Length: 331
Ligand SMILES: Cc1cc2nc3c(=O)[nH]c(=O)nc-3n(C[C@H](O)[C@H](O)[C@H](O)COP(=O)(O)OP(=O)(O)OC[C@H]3O[C@@H](n4cnc5c(N)ncnc54)[C@H](O)[C@@H]3O)c2cc1C
Image 1: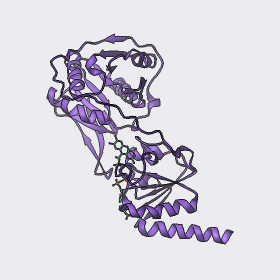
Image 2 (image 1 turned 135 degrees about the vertical axis):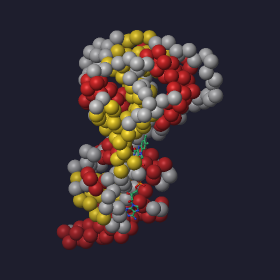
Image 3 (image 1 turned 45 degrees about the vertical axis):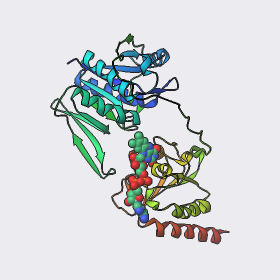
Image 4 (image 1 turned 90 degrees about the horizontal axis):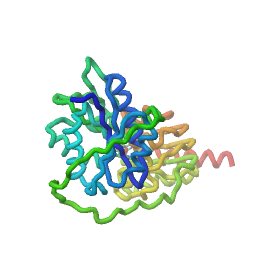
C-alpha cells in the first residue's frame, strides 16, 4: 500500500466542478492528519485544460488518465479505468464526490476490487489510526458511524456541500503526470446517444426576497394551491424540494438545493420540507427561516428561526389568513 490519497476530479463542459475542490479540502485534511499525499485523478479525453486548471490550483500531483473510451461517462469504462489505477498505485484511499455517476460506478469498482465502499459521508474522524465515517440515515433522523472491515484501499464518497471548497489549500503548480489504462478488453455495453442540456432557469430565485418552499409533506399536487396562496399574499416566489420537481408537480427551475438553485432570501418558509443536506446547502444563507413540519424531530428545525410543529394543511391557510388580516388592518 502506498501513502497516497487519490481523489477523482468532477468536470463537465470543459470546466472543473465545485465538488472537486470540496473533495480536495477533505482529502488534504485527512492527508495532513495521516501524513499521506493527495493526488487528483482526472478521467476523460481531451482533458489537458482540466488538468491544467486543477494543477494551477494545488500543490500536489495531478494524474491525467486520457483514453477515447472515457470521452463520455460509461460505468464499465470508468470502473475498469479506476480499477487499473488502484492496482497500479495501491492507494490508501480513493475519494469521490457523491454524485449520480459515483453511485453508479463506485459499487461496481468496489465489488471488482473486493473491497468496501462507504457512500455519502458527511464527516470523518481518525481514532487510533482507524478511519470512522459519519453518514446520515433515515432522512437525517439518525447519524451512522461506519468503518471499513477490509482495506486499504478505502473507497469513500463525500456528500456534496459537507466539506467547504474554501478549505482546500489552493495555489501552486502541481505536476501533471500521464497514467495509462488499457480498456480495449472492456466490453462496450452501452452507447451515449445524446446529451440533453437542461433548460436554463427561467426563474431566478437567487434574487427573491421571500420564498415559500414546498416539500413532499404537501402530500398532493392539488394542495400546492395553499402554498401558492401564502406566496401570493407575501409577494413571495414558490420554491420546491427535489421530489416535487421529480414528480413534475413544479418545474425544475423552482428546485432549491445542491442540484437546484442556491438562494439567500430575507425570509424562507420551508413547508413540509424535511431538511435533507442537499436541500439545506441551497438555502442555508437565508436570513430568516420559518419551518412548518408535523415531525418535531425534522432536521429543518435545527436551522429554523421559527418552527411550527403541525399539519401544514391547517397551518399554511391560517398563516395566509393572518397575513391578509394584518394587511387589511394596516391599509
Ligand atoms: C445527488 C443528490 C442531489 C440532490 N439534490 C437535491 C436538491 O437540489 N434539492 C432537494 O430538495 N433535494 C435534493 N436531493 C434529495 C434530498 O436528499 C431529499 O431526498 C429531499 O430534499 C427530500 O425532500 P422533502 O424534504 O420534500 O421530502 P421528505 O424528506 O420526504 O420530507 C417531507 C417532510 O414533510 C413532513 N410532512 C409530511 N406531511 C406533513 C404535513 N401534513 N404537515 C407538515 N409536515 C408534513 C414530514 O415530516 C417530512 O419531514 C438530492 C439527493 C441526491 C442524492
